Amino acid sequence: MIKKRKVLVLGSGGREHAFVYKFHNDPLVSEIFCSPGNGGTGLIAKNILLDLDNHNEIMSFVKDNNIDLTVVGPENPLADGIVDSFRKSNLIIFGPDAFCAQLESSKIFARDIMSEYNIPHPKYYACSNKQEAMEAKNTLGLPIVLKADGLAAGKGVIICNTESEFDDGLKHMYEKNTFGEASKLVSVEECLIGEELSVFAVCEGKNYKILNTAQDHKRVFDNDLGPNTGGMGAYSPTPLSTNSIITQTSRNIIEPTLKAMNDKGHPYSGFLYVGIMIVDGKPYVIEYNVRMGDPETQVVLPLLESSLFDLLYKSATESLSDVDMQIADKTAVTVVLASKGYPNHYEKNMVIDMQIDEGDLVFHAGTTIDKGLLYATGGRVLNVVGFGNNLQEAILDAYKISNRIKFKNKYFRTDIGQKGLRYK
Ligand code: AMP
Ligand code: GLY
Image (tube, rainbow, N blue to C red; front, side, top):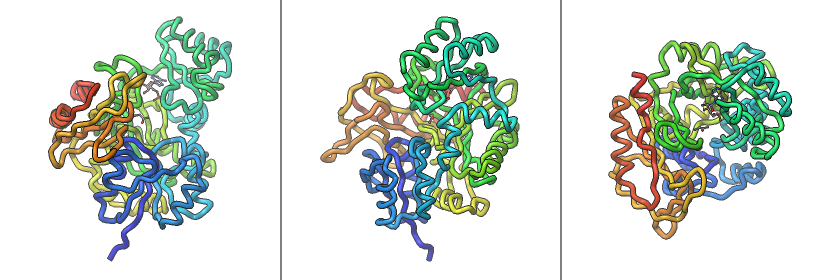
């Protein structure tokens, strides 16, 4: 008989609910803990409150409860070196160490690696003051991108189409302290114009497997208007990911990135999320993330047919090549049901009325359960997932379920996936 394993998932969003859901349905897993979790994870795992900044507290919990595998959702614990701490204590965790996490936590570190290893990327200048940024603009011209070097909760990027947007952007980076320490250094970049997609890989040293591709919808309103959010919806896979794009991404981006980390004495372990812009049929790196995306995980993981535990555990223990990974030949769409006003001010504590059928898949993001009632307690509240044999079917399924869920101030985009239909 196989020994069933215990898992700890760190984080509290829809992404983490998707991890917990996969482990819940995994015959290799006996018990799941999620910290801090949300209303949805609490239904199928044990939510526990641990301080995600306190590695010792987390490791004590792991030892006391004989956890076999820890999986990290968000980027901050990775950038803070939680993987380094676990490894020093011989505890198994899936994720990159702090050195590799710089691929996300320092945009300049990432661009310098791309430059050193000839990985296709936009021209960029590392600028520590306004004067340097203005000189970079004289060379690159408009439109231009300003990117805070450090972690800024996904908000540190300003795209400037005009001189006045550029002046304003410089003020946010260097004067107004909008991004705090993150913009002490700024990557001033050529603005690439093309189609954007994300490629997700599971990596162990120089080995990797591509999990799937997806396309996010970052702006809050339909037709990609309004402010940037954490993501209002996604679909997987995207028709942009042709064989040619996948082959070029593997050879020209993922393999040299893994080689770079290996050469520098830090073999990469963990998810690698490559944000790509396709320009004239060629993929360029917009950004790396060293974790899964949110809400992309909510469409990528349900399409994984084989065991998530087997994939991550073997990967964390250096036998990724032994994994037989199976991906469903279907399309998934997720629609984020948000509280109106997100990503700015929004109301909380509205009761949610879930009129869904058994088998409908809804991941929770900002929810809490209190005395048997479900409350919306975050900006992104729920992630409805629809499936189909093609994108059109999956879109219809996701919106059918989205329309049945009721709460005051419910807001969602009505065009998730439409971009994908246009590529076909
Ligand atoms: P990020 O936070 O790095 O994902 O950036 C947010 C968004 O800004 C990306 O999803 C792209 O749409 C856009 N972006 C970032 N860098 C560039 C670039 N160099 N050229 C064009 N668009 C970019
Ligand atoms: N959905 C974008 C991200 O997770 O960074």
